[in-house]
Length: 320
Length: 320
Image (cartoon, rainbow over all chains, first blue to last red; front, side, top):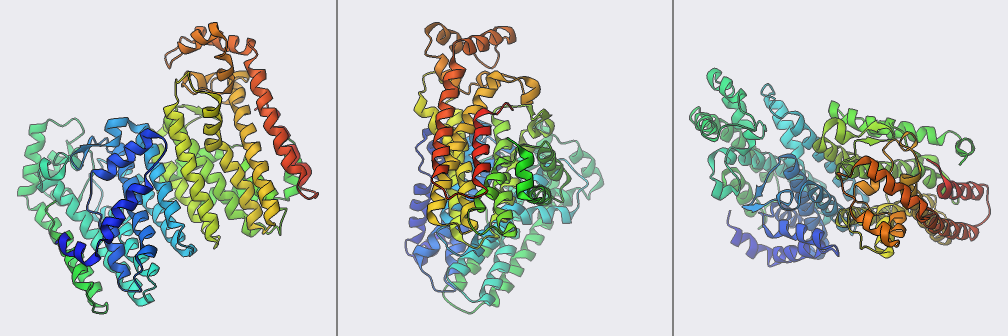
């Protein structure tokens, strides 16, 4: 994706979102402020705010109104990542130590709670209770998705449907809601709202599948965390599901656990890749990209559409 | 407190709240449902819903409107207790194993997230965005209070102000907000709302101080957890703050840590009690009870006032 183009198009608004994120995480308590800002400054693609802003361009775009929505959604995402790192026992994210690694599980848990609460505080700048209802529903799904991820760990007998439902809850719904609320806050018409929601949902599915593929194909340097980490942690992602269809590979994969020998594990990763499992997963991601593009086609033509097209193409093919 | 009297007065509404709490915690994922209901069924005094209902009697009481507020506030309290047990490494609450003890920290963290999300979902039945704003602000304070509790652990040099600010955030604000939102949902006038908020705030302060006293004076059987547990965990409560003023006791208390020898620790607990620290803390609790009663005096007379009076007297003198 050409971030520069999007930056230019959004005319400094993304920079203002960044400032606002920083302002939202100010806290008197030093450890809380440090832990929150540590995470914020590690960067991130900020795709949720970008989706909010671009979707809002389909209505009456007023940055001051869109801002709390964009910031709120990024904060919800951050809070869920922080709790995620506690669950996954992850020490690195975006190449930096996680809050959990630096300050421990307890601080990580409450920093997540704090950031979530801040995001709820921000969204209440919007008077319309429908926004709060949509967000609350999304948070319920998000937490169920997280619990399902724990439940499904090292369960090598789960099927494709279980995986898809989990990533829907864990990732796709929040991206769909970013598009929906962006459209809503700008009072785009119902038709646009529905199409943008669909676009966001399919983009979100493609995003998570690509994320799961990158865990296999990328390098520690690019990921900011070790490759194959998902499988070691017992998270059964789409490439693994496809690889499990190979009988002999199936037996090997089932032996993987948190204490896997690094060299033997690396061999399994190579075999999963050689079995074509990554390509099959890639095809599913492409399917979702196509569905997102279809939803986009139905939207009225404007100068924002090409950027949303670029976003989802980037998402389906990103290398980091 | 005469619960029977309150039950009679509320005419079955508390029972309906209980049913609604159970309904709110239904989840497809078995572990999530089990963990949530495990907590719910362990019981509790449900003082937040009681405050909501009683405060609503100062306006136009409509149970169907008050219900989501009452349920939501109890769920927020439950979610915070569950995260609290992770922090305090607590194995028992209300005489039953904690979620953390039974299912581990990770499940406990997400069960807390789930219950919080459910509570937000419920409150969105109220169309007025002010409700969501008040709740979100309270959640920010709650999480800051929790972080402060971690920060202040084993800090024997903290002062009374630090303690009071912490319990305000951790406990009193949520009880104040229970009264406020109960009054608001029933459209009680502004004056009543303000007085009920004050009443709730002072009652909440008294409640937490009494809780901290009971940790010393009660028994494992009544508490459902070991006595003196707060101090062992490094939580410096009001009786400890008063005991620290005694030079020789000060030296002994500073030696306490998580690995304290049970017999030696028991002796310290006895010395804290003998030093009159509990009585001094009790006086502070009584001060807050008096302030709550003053706020109550300013409210118009009705059949609910005597019950609110009883509530705060119970809170200041409760034995469990």
